[in-house]
Amino acid sequence: MKIKINRNKNYTTMSNYHLRDKELSLKAKGMMSLMLSLPDEWEYSIDGLTTLSTDGKDSINSALKELEKRHYLVRTQQFNDKNKFDGYRYDLYECPYLEIPSTEKPYTENPQTENPPQINKEIINKELNNKILNNKENTKESEKESKILELFNEFWDIYPRKVDKKGSYKAFKNIDNIIEIAPEIISAVKKHKQTRQWRNIQYIPHPTTYLHQERWETVEEDRDIDKWFNDYWEEVKRETERENESR
Image (cartoon, rainbow, N blue to C red; front, side):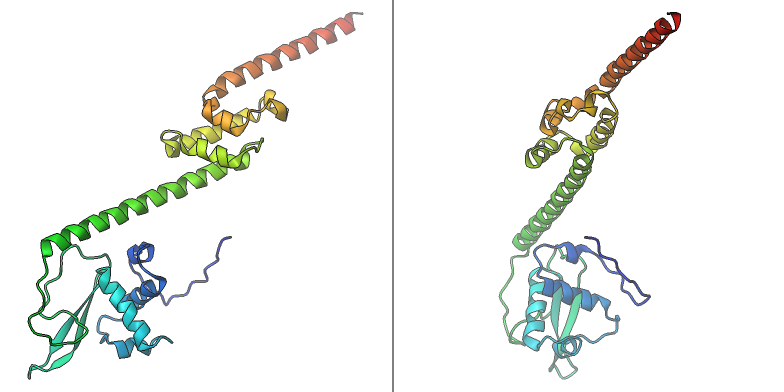
C-alpha cells in the first residue's frame, strides 16, 4: 500500500543515514531527527528537549545515551570562568564518527570526575570502522534483495502460468547478474506470450523450468518457428481458397 504525503513548506533537510541505521531504535532516530531540525543556536539540554515532546527526562536521556553509544552524539562538560560546571556542549554527527572526538571533559553520569579512565583509541577506531563497513555492506545487500524482489514481482505479474511462486523466486534470485538480466527475461516473456504455442496454457513451461533452462534466450528462435507456422498455414489457406475457386 502506498502512502500519500501531504507536504508543506515547513520542512528540514537532513541525512537519511541515521534513519536507515537498523541498529538504532525508533526513539533514538526520532531524537536525532528532532535535534537536527533545531536551529544552530539552540541551547541543548535534557530539560529543553523534554519541553518538545511528551517524553520525560528518563526517556530523553536514554535516547541520548543510545545516540552516544552509536557515535552520533558527543556530550562535553562545560565550565564557567569560576571553573564551575555549566552544562554540556552537544556535538551531533550525521554519520557515526570514525575517530574518538577530542573533548576535554566528555559526558559522564557524575560530572567533574577526576582521573577518567584511559581509552585505547586505536582499538576502538578499528572496531568502529569495521562496524560501519559491516553496516554499509548490510545496507547494500538489503537494497539488492529489495531490487531483486521488485524485478521478480514484475516477472511474476506477466508470466501466464503461475505455479510454485516460492521455487520460482529462488530460481530467479539464483541467476547470475539477475538485476542486469531481469529486463531481458521480462521482455522475452512478453514476446513468448505472443507466440502460437503460448496461447494454450498446457504448452507453457512452468516458471521454474523457464528460468532454470534459460528459455528467455530462445525467444527469437521460437518466434521464427511461430512465424514459419503462421506463414505455412496462411499459404495452406490461400491454396485451399484457390482450389475452391477453380471448381
